[in-house]
Image 1 (cartoon, rainbow, N blue to C red):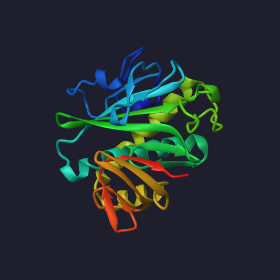
Image 2 (image 1 turned 180 degrees about the vertical axis):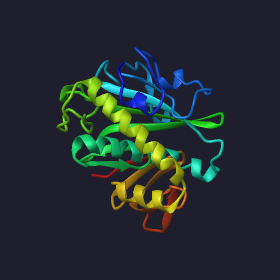
Image 3 (image 1 turned 30 degrees about the horizontal axis):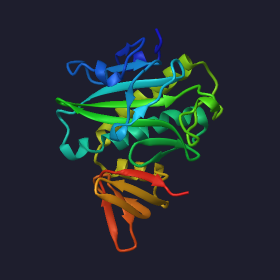
Length: 241
C-alpha cells in the first residue's frame, strides 16, 4: 500500500500510471475519496496549462468533496481552502515556510512547490493538486520552482507523498465547515503572500497592474490600480519582482 496513513482518513485509490487523476474520479464515490499517483503523465493546471510530473518524484491527487449540503457562496471558497490545507500539510515538512499565491499556488520562499485546481462535478467538487516531492534542481519545470527535497524534507517519494496526503486530507476536512466564514477568510488572508505585493494580473480582456491589498468577502483578490480598488475574481497573477 502506497498511502497507508492517508488511507486511515479516507478511501485512497492508488493509480500506477494515469494521464490525469481528474480522469479517474467517480462521482458516485464517498466523500473525500482520493485518487493518487506518483506517475501522472498529462496533468492539467489553470488556464489549460500542463502540470509536468516526472515519474516517481511528484505526488498527483484528486479528492472528491461532496457539496450538496453546502451554500453556493461557501463552495466558491473551495480552491482557497484547498490551498490552505495543502500549505498546512507542507508546513509540517519544511518548518512553517509554505505560503499561498492567489488563487491556487503554494510557495516556499517565493518558489512554487505545489498547485491546486478544482473542477465542479455533479453535487461535488474534484479538488486536484500536485506536489514536487524529490525533484533535484536540474529537474524543476522552471527556475522559480522547488521541491520538498530541495527545501530540506527527508524521506523517499512514497514516504513524503503519504505524509502530505494524510495531512492534506485531515486539514481539508477540518476546513470544510468553515467555508465562507470569517475564520477561513482571516486564515487565508494571513497565508497569502500575494497581499502587499505589486502584481500583474493577466485578465481575459487585458492586463491589470497594481498592488494586492486584500481579500474580498467571496475570496476575490483586491488590487489597488492607482485609480481605485479592483476586485479580481479570475485571472493569472504574477508577483512583480
